Length: 207
Image: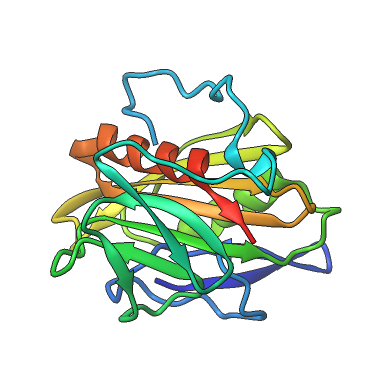
């Protein structure tokens, strides 16, 4: 789905729309690439550091049911075993899905907005942009370890055959670059969405 830039306070900032031909595109000012626990569970940040904050030289690994893939966009990440890079997308960045199934996905892209705009501020702008989707509801925007932040939200999705839940995490790599990692899927399977995002964050290694 489409990623775009929203103008706020005279500065171009990220505003990401989630994935899939079903949603309208946001106007893209740059090709910058741009989530979530069950509502009954806590949305407190994970206590452990994100993988993007660990040594760039460490080799990523993942336990079943995940497999580490090397993406030609310049990173390695764990996705559910059997998922493949999808090239039939409107949005920027790299998308991974189960072949023939568009109900769920993992998306990863570089954040190119200025570092002076904090991660949580970017995600609040993103949430405002996502508000144009039918039935959109922001669940939470919470700070996470390593100067990261996480947005959890839901909206009505034909691809997910009802409510879709998304979790978007902005993480910082050792060289200071910021990346957005996003997992989405049916809201009724929120535990799987959270697991997919956690696996991606813990295994993510930029080149």
